[in-house]
Image 1: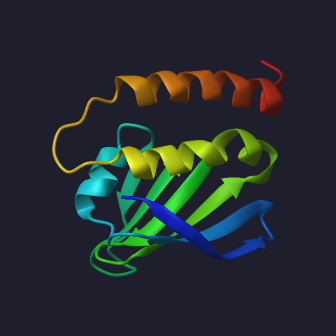
Image 2: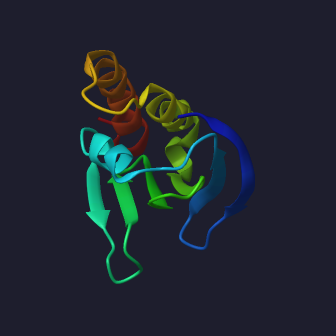
Image 3: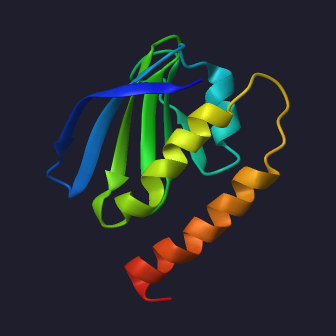
Amino acid sequence: MRILRSVRHKSCADGSFMKEFLLDAPVTAGFFAYLENFGEVEALRNVGEGFYKFEKTDWFSIKGMNGDTTVEVRFKKEAMDLTADFVYLLFSSYREGAADLSLLKQREQAIERRVKERLYGL
């Protein structure tokens, strides 16, 4: 699955930066299950059947509806330059079925150190 382009973006009142991405294929429940390897996924049944939210604390969140070709990504503005490429990598690396996540996990760990250093001085 690939991100084709950003169709809308804006600065939000909570300090985050939102981008709506157009995808080359619809998101699936399997995609959100894959994202569980990198953060917390929640099915928001009160919003509608098939609506999901993914949260990677201090990085970004992704919201989307099963079957849609657009998703909303909210970046933590202070770390967006460090984490935006990882969003593209998550989408382009997704394949149906079992996947080898070792390279993605290595990349995630390297970025995590830089994000913590920037946000918390650790």
